[in-house]
Length: 341
Image (cartoon, rainbow, N blue to C red):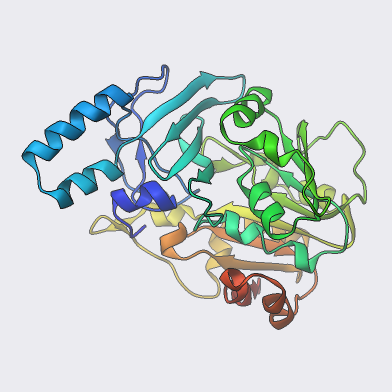
């Protein structure tokens, strides 16, 4: 989820998508290149090098290529931090010079990222989630599909008094995220009293009663590169809405659209216009569940062409824009009501 070069996509999670041929061990084959499906921001590791291998390769590059070519090659280097199979996922955490990524399942989708050097923005749909707190009541916010905690990290950085519940079904993933993705740091209270409570639980069938509990719910639930099948059911969205406080909202990563698998000159054939949301099955079922109360937007090509959806009454876009950081002030004005045209 892509107009950037394969080198650029290492750092922004956008770009031509590539898959591993194998992921059964920490050693990976050179990837098979395929056309992007634009379902969820993803990338794959073209090769994974141990530090000694990287140093040897660097010497060879410097001897045989120009400085510019060396720099380009360096930007494509990845190395595996850990790789393990759980009941739910094939979990791989990889490092680049600038970031660390959590890859899951056979698609090797990127489900979380930590930028090195202090940059909090991801240039992907996670940034959209950080705009939710100003338009919901005071109260806890749930993140369904916590992954390695990218959305939680960004929200607590921008809104340090927020109480977050992060639900993730995979206990091994949580263990690895605490060890390698800094998740344990998010579980400590911030200077403003906010924190993340991690719950190893099925977000769609939680073990505790959460009726009317949440001011907002962020939904980022995928399996094998697709939005969970349960989220294609109207009743499930009614169930999720019952967990909200009055005037609470749900914000959802809805992925892309199947029709964009068609390519022209090796690039996605884009479908544009105010009715394009109807091609996204998740937004379509949400609009059936909440007629006249679903809003949609699409992240730019450079950020993966994801659809995101928002429930509730019409937000005051101007007021919302004034309450979010400058980075988000223009993007929140792009939300549109789902209208059958």
